Amino acid sequence: MKLHEMVKELQSVMSLDFDERAILFEKYRDILNSEISTNPSNIEAFCLMAMITCELREDTEKSIEILEQCYLQNQLNFSDEGFALWATDMAYFLLEEYDESSEERAVQLLSQAINRNSNYANTYYAYGKVCFRRKDFEKASKLFHKAFEISAKKSYKYCEAVSLLAHSNQNEGITLLKSIYSYPFENEKVDVNTALTLGRELAISGSLDEAKKIAEILLKTEYREFDIEIDEMSDFMYILGDYKSCVELYDKYQFLEEESWLNKYFYALKQTGQESIAEKRLQEITEKIEKDINNEKMNPTHWENYEDYEYYISSETKRLNAIREGYNKVFIYSDDILPDVYYDMIYECYYINCPRHCL
Image 1 (cartoon, rainbow, N blue to C red):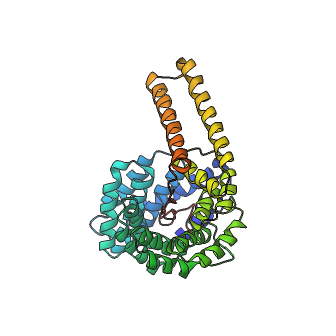
Image 2 (tube, one colour):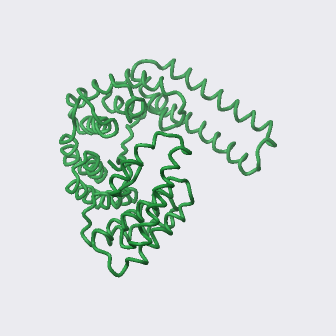
Image 3 (cartoon, rainbow, N blue to C red):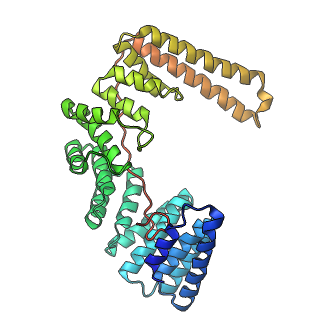
């Protein structure tokens, strides 16, 4: 059986319970083990066996050992394509399944694969992901651009655009987002995030009419169906100065009571003439946090150790003080509360021939 047919069949059982799909995974692991015993230069077989081992919930070390074996048997005759395949998949385990100490090795492998002119978009996306996390946004944008050149996926173009925005290249970032913006939405992860990010950037840049058109579309969207949250949408409304919608959305998102969130909420209430509601909300939050703190002070022995107990009391006290200070900034000192500006890329699997995600 050809490898792509094997991957396709493995994907067909992903919706089954673990024990049921494990039967087929174990079958193909045995087949692949036999294949690499007789043909150790089959890099794809090594890589698929490593991921199958991961899918069977065995220790990540075993998957890495399989790929280490692959390297030892092929290091002298790796083709550029074979090395890029192996290096990208090994980097996946080092970055996603192992620990932070292995990141530098993963970066070295991805760099080597790129220096050998990897033809896999996954390689450039994986390295771009690391650079983005390290806040090297300029390099990340170039890597995502290269990934898109190899495989014209909207997600790569989105990541390039967000990297440019994070690097303060707003005009170029907006242009890229416009190039992939489409409605009606088809891809819940890419299309909706593109609309949200584009709308926010248009609002920040002063293109309010364009931004409002996108906001009208998103306000009709079922957020849980797509890949955005109500608090993200309320932040968009805050940037637009639509404080009424902002308050309505925040009221649906009551489980987060932090200073950065409530400062904007209090400010929006003030702008809509609802000072009494803000005062009542502060009182409710204060009473709840103080009650929780006092309850824990009465029962410190319920904690496993005194350090955790102390940390809880201290952090909750700081949180309450920060919320009060934020309220005072709005209603006593009349400070302007600026909107949050944040950027995040779209995360997806980059393991080459992944039996769970490969199309």
